[in-house]
Length: 164
Image (cartoon, rainbow, N blue to C red; front, side):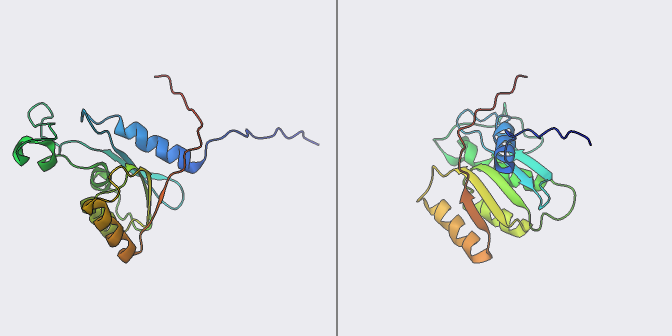
């Protein structure tokens, strides 16, 4: 009879893994104030796409503003694509129907619309620092109406170190 070696017990959970991927993706953002990442996974826990906040393809991050204050055209807000929308647009494989999106910041109302239209059914978010704002309240109304489930990721406190 063969001796069976027990499996490793300290494997990270799927939520830890995918939120970690979202956080790592957010580290690609060149925004000096907000680094937001997103990771879309299917029902089989396969990563479909990732994204982070930044300017659209072909728009130089050296020529467009990163400012948060001033006239609209002199701030990042008129130009930056949010991580959720980037993750949705980066996917080239067909439908995202029934998928789950992990995002480091609760989606704004514009991203909520894209999430709903893409058919994503669950949002897992790390932070909601804009809770109570009109954008977040509109997001919640939209997602509730469309049957999109959302919940806050519960950190385990586990530290994961990656040497690059």
